[in-house]
Image (cartoon, rainbow, N blue to C red; front, side, top):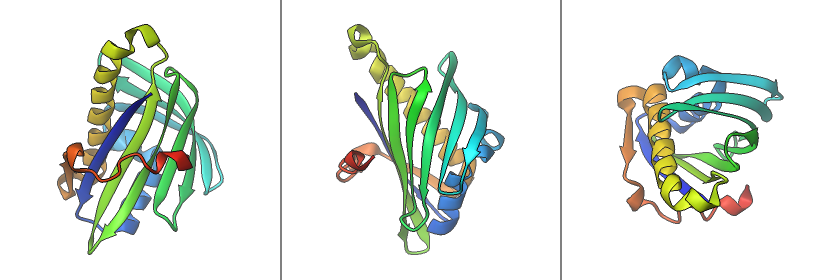
Length: 161
């Protein structure tokens, strides 16, 4: 399993940032790398979504279960089928005065153990790039991506997924 971790500061209130991140169906309108997001089911607290995302020179497709916790400003996701062996993680929004800090944390496994040493760093970089595009697409100039080396206890919350 490989970790992906990204943090950003967004010059918007936490509630607005959470709402934008939770609107999964809007992602293709804000960034070209997300080709399609179909909401297969949606109860408001949980949904099943099917994704098609540009990934280097190809496409990644997967279906995930998404859980929304508005009180905690947290969205968790777990791939239930798709191109990766495993993909799960969360978006967490923290209020910081009138702004927000957004954390994206995920674990993934390509499912190719013999090539993991070579392919997973490339995949990690591509996922980080796509998450950055998501944030910049949703929040534009209001978003500043921060270096992941400055993160505190990066994946300690992953056990809760």
